Amino acid sequence: MTSKSIILLSGGLDSAVSLAVCKEKENIELALFFDYGQKSFEQEKQAVQKFSEYYNIKHEIINLNWLKKITNTALVNTTKKIPVLQNDDLDNQIITNISANKVWVPNRNGLFINIAACYSDSFGFEKIIIGANKEEGTTFSDNSADFVEKINDSLFFSTKIKPKVIAPLINLDKTEIIKLGKSVNLPFAFIRSCYSDSEYHCGICESCKRLKRGLERANLFDIVNLLFKN
Image (tube, rainbow, N blue to C red; front, side):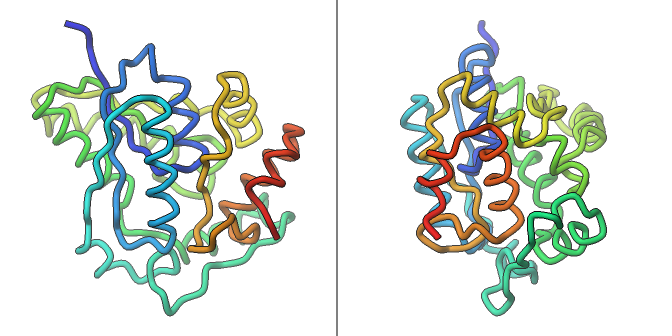
């Protein structure tokens, strides 16, 4: 029997490129998208639907209302403003650590992967694909190579099927990820990487700043103009 995989799909750059790169060779059959009360939920949901249809895979929305209730950061809490960064701030570890704390969702990636592992045990998915990458791994510990290694150690004991978490972008920065996406004809117009609930990417949150800088460095100014209207 051919092995099959499950992917965590948010509609953002990293998970979308991971899907595009791994679609055939990893036999991805299902994408999981999580509703944890994030401000950009509706926009992310539309992106996930578009990518799922484009790559012809099923997707499920997992409702995590309880996570919203215990999350008190700007990514979820409507009374708190999403932090604004300047381009020069993106490589300043002190500033990005402060920004990360303001959008941190408790054990988010660990939880998402463990939910995917439940699906793996029930439906035989041998691999769990995530969009962790080098650039965000310097700020968010649950995007690092060490995290991927350790959670694989954990799943070896907590599951019967022992799925392997793979992160195809783990050694890439945003520019390299974008170039990879371009090489596999990723439909960049579908991407939703913004923290806000605005119609277009806000262009000022950290996620937008990293996406925009990567696109500009990759000379994809047509995509910049498409995604960023302000």
